[in-house]
Amino acid sequence: MLRQALPEIKTESLPGPNAAAVIARRSAAIPSAIRCAYPVVIARGEGAMIEDVDGNRFLDWIGGVGVLNIGYTHPEVVEAVKEQADRYFHGMFNIVTHEGYVALAEKLCSIVPVQGDKKRAFFANSGAEANENAVKVAKAFTKRPNIIVFSGAFHGRTMLTMSMTAKKAYAKGMGPFPDGIYRAKFPYLYRNPEGLPKERELDYYLESIQSVFEEATPPEQVAAIVVEPLQGEGGFIPAPLPWVKALRSICDQHGILLIADEVQTGFCRTGKMFASDYWKAEGAAPDILVTAKSIAAGVPLSAIVAREDIMEAVPGGVIGGTYCGNPLACAAALKVIEVMERDHLADRSAEIGRVARERFLRLQENYPVVGDVRGLGGMLGLEFVIDPESRQPNPAFVNNLVQEAVRRGLMIESAGTYGNVIRFLAPLTMTDEQLAAGLDILEASIQALL
Image (cartoon, rainbow, N blue to C red; front, side, top):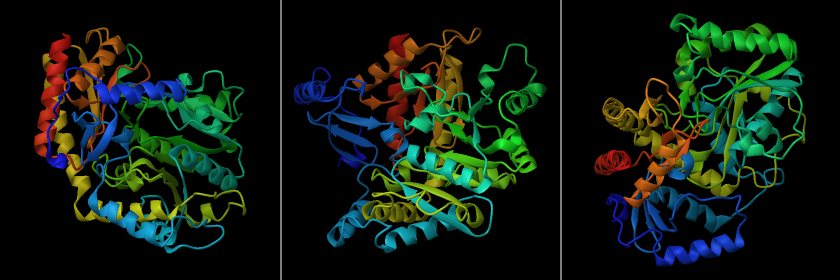
């Protein structure tokens, strides 16, 4: 059974002959800008495992880049989607009400850790759409034009979210960009300025926000500050809780809304249902939370949740769309949440993260090329460097590591401003045996390259 299987490469090389044929067709029909770093053509997937068209089996630690926290083809989710498909595929929510949309909104309002007792939720199709809609909501409520984002941020590829995203490789040649987006420094503690004392860290990064207020936009013109609780593309960097609490205080002082971008961190990835649950425990819950990816196990869906008075400030016609809250996606999401709560996948994420972190820390001790290990729960990053003294990024090693690991049956992906971080986004339904096998492959791959 593939769900319980371990990695196994059967062909003499990758891609195998059948996969090579499909990849050749891809090269002829698809824009080359949509790249794929892996010699894998999926035939089926179960749990944390992929079988390709040549019968090779891979352990997937990418999970559709955080989409598959519940794993591939979870049987209960598959059945829920089939049951909905038998009734109807589509019903635009501006035209007819379908109960799945309502039930999912009710459920999210009951579990999402945003400020306020009475909440409302609505849906879009992707993380980028959710972020864009959250900004719309914030502007409608505050009647202010500007937003603040951070270094290392990734928020999407629409025109607005490309502008919000820090890494401009994702926006090459796409300007001019929208006005009113200003950037402060995110607390990337592993790469603090040389000589910065530890006791000055918090002040240094908070002063960056004050500089934006002084040099770019006064605070009374800022609608929202948008932040990832744990940066994804930026290099799997957690936002320190003391900094988040200070950020919450700044927002409260100036009437600014705090938006948590939980597109990647939501749905048990960090050891809680949402990473903002950690914020809420410290009295620093966000005003608006956006989430997507693992919300519906791979069916396109995203959500925006905020307290009622914020949501009700939005004029009619400004939000919504043809496919937003599609019935199939809502059915999948309701079942995903049910399974995650029943099977305690947040606890499983914490356990997977504990085992993986212990092994990663041993790698850091044994191999100087591993510079830093960080993250929350089952969302971990390993930063690779030339040497631990200079901390010079080592993207070449990471590129080679990705290819070496996949040849051994483990799929991992890079991230980070410098492309020198390996991200750990394994499905939370992965077995203990699969986790152990993957950790062994990762270390063997590092040894082979060294």
